[in-house]
Image (tube, rainbow, N blue to C red; front, side, top):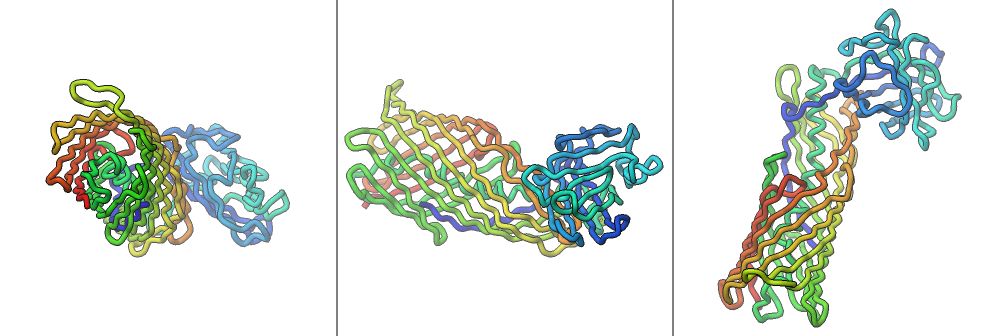
Length: 457
């Protein structure tokens, strides 16, 4: 079991990402129906693919990125509702080409008022308390068809008060999904870096115990700019025939590996567990009134990983290299706690994110022993991710007037990684290991490396 504690600083700037979307504010009022119910919300539209004129009815179309509604003042059905609570939509401009940069309600002599034009949202199955459309441009609070009615009174480009460039503000919010990605990256670096080989595959140097110290680094720059480092110190010891366990400490955290070699064979079965606890500090930059403003957030990231790996003995030799296959399966759960930013003119709050990443690796190691001191290992492995899109990023601006629900990104499912290990005995009881890896584009570091020193006692 490995427990690591560290802190990370992320900066998210609006200029780095641009969304092909526009977020519109929605308002409904019960005044014309003689009640005090109101509803506010946002709908995130991919205006580059949305038809205009628009005429759709049925399930939420692909160009609706998210939908958030909050009902208040109603006799029942008050609360906040997100995309998952809504299953379908009617959006019909009756052949009129909308001016998407202006207030939509009232265009073309009264569009989206009364029976002219139609904008209606409908709750999904399984969410009986969500608001529901009942007639053109009317929303009814609560379950059934007996709740307070509210008429659509505004449908316009919107955002928190003071936002002059809402697309840039949403772009900076979207970058907060990197917090979850950072937690996953921090967990995977030592898991498949310094610990990419079972402990039992290292020379025991004639003793039943070893001390080790390792340092990992990883870097990606082709599709993202990420640099990660970690380090640890630990000891391991034979605890039974063909079985050893170890524990390590890095900045006050601990690490335990468990390897087992079936008696009388050359197979290695290893189980590695890792728990990481990370402190995240996020400095989000965004455009505000012609200048760049910053809002600061702090949260905790927890990752839990388990990897089962099986290493086969050398099956054949070519050119002095012995070839041995291996396979592994790993699960990593990452949780980003909810947090609210402070400072800046337009801070936001973010809901908790949680996701389980699962991957399998199938590879082969080619090992060449030059002499009693030097050994070279070349590895080639294919990596496949089984999990789908990561967690959605949901929350709202600090005023509560604009909610957002940005879909998670699907991982690149496949990549190939090439590795080199050099084991060199500095002394009869001291081993130096240097490893380096390079990967095709995927969810692992483009390049990574680790250095460890092991002393037997």
